Structure formats: C-alpha cells, structure tokens
Image 1: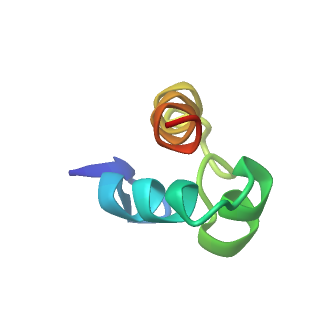
Image 2: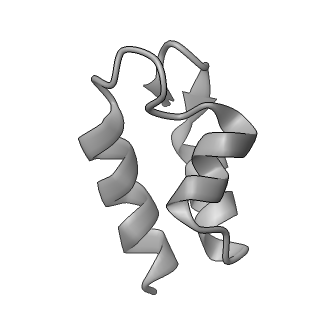
Length: 54
C-alpha cells in the first residue's frame, strides 16, 4: 500500500528501511517520505516506529 503519495513510497519500503536500522530522518532523506505535503508524516512515522522497535 502506498503511504506517501507525493514520493510514491509504500509500506513495504518503510518497513524494510526500519528493519535495516535506518533512522526516520534517513528514510526521509533517501526516499522523500513526509517532505512535501506532510499528510503522510504521522502514518509513516508510526509504521516506521512499529517496525524499528520490534
């Protein structure tokens, strides 16, 4: 499922990056998540956090 429409980033991409140990800031820099309109920021961060902490 696409989480960030502006950057076309899926939940799978966010999960993969989080499990690889990337910080949310690295995810933003590499994939552009939550850097344009910002509507996905909360959802993207929640998803990243749930995968990064597990």
